Length: 166
Image (cartoon, rainbow, N blue to C red):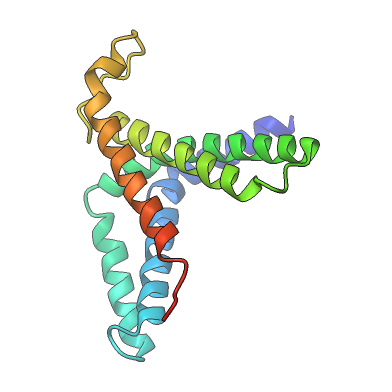
């Protein structure tokens, strides 16, 4: 009974555009506003920050491109967070505090890369064939290699930038 009510409410919210327009707009607006407010790139005038954030939020939803991409990437993000939750439980079970930050960074990076690759492929922004026929890796190894190189460079930059001896 409760499941049917929740399903009906979520269906009604979907019909009025909550998931396609309102939530993506609020997310984009909040992120742009926070960046403008923190960076002070346009000065301290909060009114300008609001207007620019409002314009970017509305313009980004103009052609359903962002809404459709969000509908692809966020379900995979939920799966990735579920995997991290299971890893957290297992880390607590075995008591791996000593290596936990390295494990979290590595696992999080792997999950992030997989989410990005699968989402971009499902949204047809990468030319990958994800039919899981066993031929996927032979067709997409250059893309995976590029992501691994970028990840390695980011890791090296973060690792080397940690100590300041001057």
